[in-house]
Image (cartoon, rainbow, N blue to C red; front, side, top):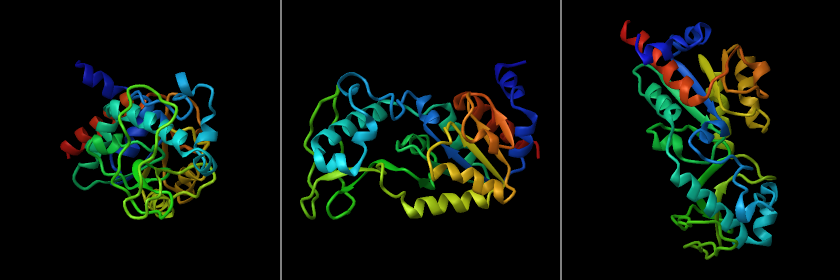
Length: 264
């Protein structure tokens, strides 16, 4: 028996039974998915220069108003860490699944990085915004500016200026105290409600309102499968739970789906 066959045999039968016939699949991903690529979680990024700062105090509109140079420097360091990371096997597997004929797979992620896109997938919704979707903090227009490449954390960096109004350009993430992007959240909610299967991967299930998405699906009778090496706030709402890392579970699951489709 090959190593791949061994891995495929590890897929829980109940999970495979839900995934193989599903034609409308909604995948909800959280920080654990990106952490497997080496992207520090929101609080794990606080090392070295930043270890004495509370990220919850840097990721706010008030922090930006008070010291935009400090906030821009912190996000520039985060952007550097994301650029250094590569999509993991879980990202690649989701992209493969999305490309199968007769499968409508949508991705809604709480992650602000671009690892799904770099793996070749289309993302329906970044419900907490996008790190690289910069915009003017004054007029709100999208900006073509980018973060500087920093080789190590620095305390202060001057944000670029908006090419339209001259205001400071800010990260495109949702800060504490800000509303989620309405169009993204509504699209994610509709995808979850109308799916044949909702797969929740690597999320704590503690950040609202994004954590309500699996519950919206469950209320419509849509089966919910959680893939997470540890218990989360989603566990009790899940119909099936698979305790495994995304980078191991998703390639195995997608291989099962591909084999079933190939055999007719």
